[in-house]
Length: 143
Image 1 (cartoon, rainbow, N blue to C red):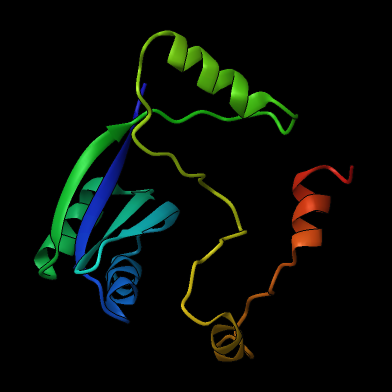
Image 2 (cartoon, one colour):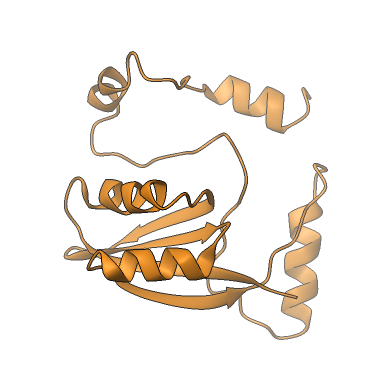
């Protein structure tokens, strides 16, 4: 069993990832998970969406370089050691994990050049900033 990931190759410039999300929005495609990776010159947006074939077509038509690949997707219980158990099991089979990211979450973490400026830009948006204490309380089950 696998899921499809769409990889979009982008110039590493402000606004390019937003263009990708607008193309998906205009085509009625929902993002279920994503990862952004970068180098000095370009970035890769890895996306898991509800309609991968439609996303690939829409993004290609909009001029983006797009590739698709298959991923293994699991649901982890919210217990200490759950991820470690999976990683140990996969490693015992001598299978390398190239990268991983979480899906279907309303919490999204961004690495940005200036956190204070980014926070100011988000004032008035339909979002809520999340603190480290909240991550510990909600994700860690309040321990």
